[in-house]
Structures are given as structure tokens and as C-alpha cells.
Length: 258
Ligand code: 4AZ
Image (cartoon, rainbow, N blue to C red):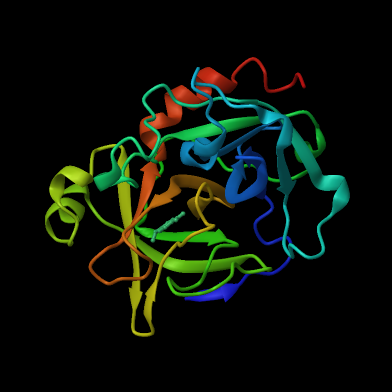
């Protein structure tokens, strides 16, 4: 069920604010993220689509993360960090290049290196496999709670009992066409007797996770889906186990140096 979390329940979740200019106007793109080391956040590459220059890297000057945030109207100013580096996965293809499948290429996570050590005081989400030891996952974010909602939430919401689907089930037992779902994706459905709980716009980049031995382990990164909460279209997440080695390679050795 979608429900408000309580302050401090998921200390490894951060909220991203990315500001960018287009045709002289300023825009702002909200996303979720997870804290995976003292200085790295993991999020979805497509959160940086608009900042991706023709040469293929982003300008991180105006990327902020609110660590362990809860109420967006009352942020902890001391827990705001500025990204010093944004690392996009090489296999990531920005949306817009294939207009008919505009949302199917959003699955690669990107760690954001923070310039602050502030996050060392909060919990980390493990991205090491084995991860999907249970199909009972939780997602959390500030995104819309329904496809037709007008606004994002000001408080961090959570949906528990998200069930992961096998790759074959997602390919063949949903309304997606099989070639939309590749092995780097993991689908999850939050259908229950109350309806369907699903990630939605604004949740992108945030974690799908479960708790194991008192530790949060992250299995997915909110990526895309056809609409939100449609019974035949489960949420699609980046499959973290497929990127765990990449995350380690990109973050090792820099974890203690800001
Ligand atoms: C989005 O637009 C988005 N139902 C994220 C997740 C889902 C749909 C849309 C999954 O960021």
C-alpha cells in the first residue's frame, strides 16, 4: 500500500534536484536516489537526460541532493549536498532517440559523487548481490501516487509488498512486448486487494529494496513503466545486480575522498 513513511525510516534515500536551462528558461527535474557509500548516490541515468551535452557528459553544478529527506517543504539544510561528478553508464541511451520507445532506455543507474561527507552519518543501501532473496520489495519516493495526480508528494511515501516478476513473466505475461523488457530490467507489481501500487513520475532514480539482517539491500532503481498502477503494466526497474560490478568499479577508491 502507498503510505507515508515516517521521518528517518529510510535514511539511505535522497531526493535529487537538478536544475537546467533550455531556450533561456530554467527547469527543474526531481528524482529519487539512494546513498550507497559515504560519497556516492545511485540514481537513474535518465534523470540527467536534459543535462547530457552533445559530447556525452553532464554539467553537475546545479545538481543537489537532499540526504535522508522527508518533508520537501521542510528540508534539513545541512543535509544538502552538491554533486561534484555525475557518472553515466556507457550503455545508456537517452530517451528521445527512439520516440516510439521513449522510456525503454532508462535503466542504467548513475552514481552521483557528492562534495560533502555529510552522508557518512546515515545508512547505506547495499548494492552487492545476492539481492533478490525475496520478492517482497519496498519502494519509496516523492513521486505522484497516481498516474493522473497533478502533483508530487511533499512527504516521502512508501509502497510495501511490491512483488518482483521473473524476466519471462514480465516479457510474456504482461502487456509489454517482450523486446521492451531486457535482462537488465526487473519488473515489480504492487497489485493487492486495494488496487495497484506502483512507482510513478518523480520516483525515478529511487530504490526498490528489502531488508535483510537489519540492512537495506537494493534490488532495483525506479526506471519506467507504461503509465502508473495499470494492472497489466508493472513498474520496470534497473536490475541492480547487473550493474553491481560497474558501481563497484566506479566508486571504489574514491569512497573516502571528497
Ligand atoms: C517516470 O515518469 C515514471 N510506473 C517512473 C516509473 C513508472 C512510470 C513513470 C512506473 O519517471
